[in-house]
Length: 113
Image 1 (tube, rainbow, N blue to C red):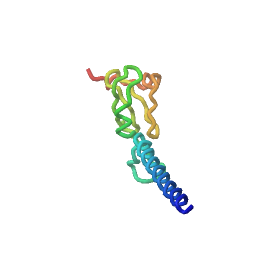
Image 2: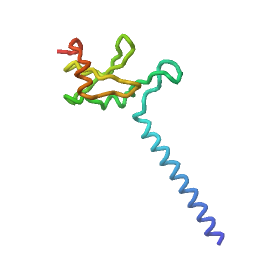
Image 3: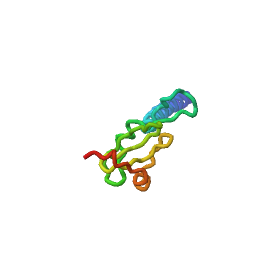
Image 4: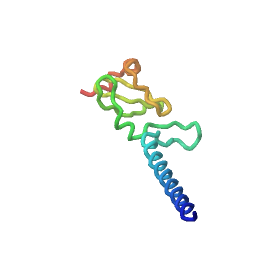
């Protein structure tokens, strides 16, 4: 009987260890695409930017090419496609990548030839 109790105790500890390892791995995977930390102080209303990992996989919905993150003179962030001049707004670290938004905010001066 003691052997069975000891075996069940060891099995429970091993199971708990496996659960902890899986939770840690999942936590690391979940934070890959988290927003970058706020850069303007630590106030709760501080703006957040797009993480570099997310920026590296974002693509223009029209031509599927890469976009770059810029900040205008007012401090507003935009994802810019330099091939067609489309600008997509970034609101609270969330890119609004709809073709309608890009066309609405098109800026001919951003086009690189």
